Length: 124
Image (cartoon, rainbow, N blue to C red; front, top):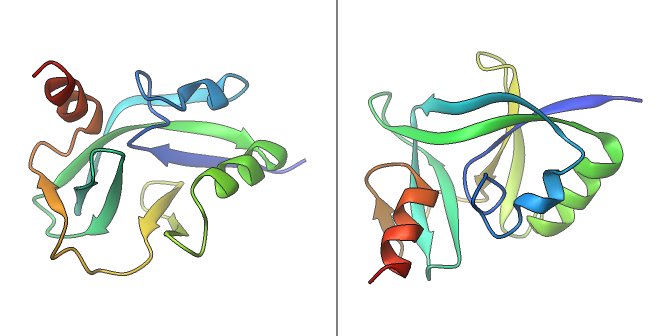
């Protein structure tokens, strides 16, 4: 069986609404900062990861998942419609990136931390 290291930054993170899907996964890195990317909010429902400046970072976790769980994640992430699944060799992990770079109608999350961002909104 093949295994994959996947960087999660939104609803799959600890505290995210879909984190329970990662129950069988192995947490490899917690509070990992991925440089060169930004997060954008889509209607306070989920974030998009987009390539940006080296100075920008996104906060997340890296999990090791098996092929079966990876297929579930692809389905959740609506692979090829909303996201593309890319390998980042310098970080030895895969990420779900926004399918295109269009962010004009999206709200930037300056902190790069979805969980912190969404919990502040829900406390308002």
